[in-house]
Image (cartoon, rainbow, N blue to C red; front, side):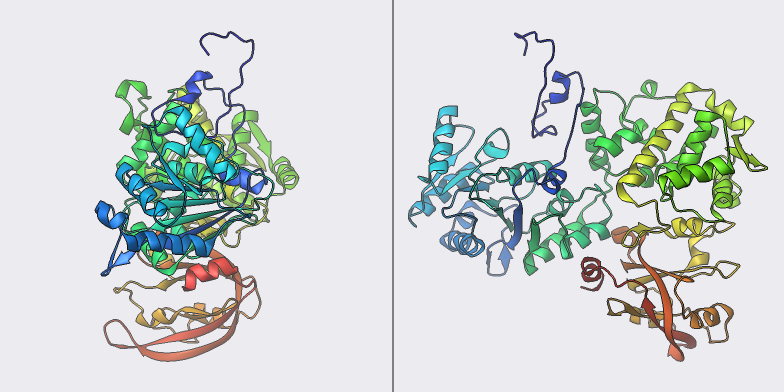
Length: 609
């Protein structure tokens, strides 16, 4: 590259995110012409499908292989026999085996090859000690069938082309999602006669097991409930499949539960990796949406705003020194714009900054052209969000309590105070970044043509806002359900696995009868004559009740958001007398409800298993 001086140079790599410290972006002045993820390439049928099976690693005397297991146990006769039992059972595509086995240590790899030889299985160990010629000879022997397996320690993660590979065996802990996908990717090259590649991952009692489901998740979310759903009921587009044996599944679920996914170390690594990727510039929110390894929802949840995140990993003179008013506005823009579940506030604010003013008629026309959902109340709701009148006093003060817009006779424009703040071009950059990031993030993950998207997750605060409430409500006020003051909507929030201190012990019985029918208990001390419960019991048509469900009440493990299941109607309502958490008698209502749409099988499994 230093010798040739072409007018145009194009570089292509399958491993832009690397673990060796090399910054390939720097070679090309950080110009990224095109990028496609492994999962998107699978969706586009550019790669061979894979069948991934997470199997339980060898267990002896009640102990499963873990990070500290001695060599003699890693290559014991029992474990090698177990390995062959599983690889034979799950098989491969095509008439002949062409396999790669990844191990964690050189001595393990060398011993495994010897053990396979005693079983008449031709294998060769390749490590960094081998020359390029030796590696190429091993690849040629694997391709022509002289070898059944190449056993290696990370050497073949990248930069090797072996199209005939039809079985990959992972006998090492997953140390990073990057390496995991690199190793899986060694078998994805298409070739005649190979319909798919079999990936057999031996899952021991490893602390980093949680990285496996995260590697398959496009959202990059650290929401543990979502990760658990991907373990219990994995979903991959196309004909590829992901399955975990029962004990292996439990190992991963345990690792997810123990993992510190909001650790400063994880966010530091994500920040520095992205910074390197974009040319050592300070990352903005839109960079995280486009190329980051953490979701911006996680950034906002941990640091409140982008500036606070930047200050953690930059020197003071490298980032702007905004006054407290602007910092508070950044928190508002982060929470209400950048990670909004409704695109309408995002676009209206963007249009006003671009055009100065816009009318109700123009806004509705733009919404119609973009096929956005809105109704007769929507513009009033958006106005309250953008002029801060929607928020409670404490929230408004936290956000700076500065109205961004004013709307007079159907014409919207920015307030003079907000225009003054925007005159600071550096601050304006952060505002536009929040708008761009919010728009891109929402369109990547949500369908803006509907109010709520079935199967997606929402916070109580999202739901109240998107149902056009006049005023913000606290989570405590909403609780398990709350009707809008004009009786138009009632969102219900059901937690299936309650914590021990849950007030309404009877509500432990909340749950599914089948995919479209649920049992749901009212709050304590309610009768069929109680105003809200009477409305619920008479709700025999879809539309009034909006049903949201999550698996666990442990916020630290599962977050605070709920899956939207759609609208529901009541089939029956019975008043009952039960004992509450203090062993006192209380009256409440047992509702049997019918969902308008049966719960997707994948989500149903995740919620009920």
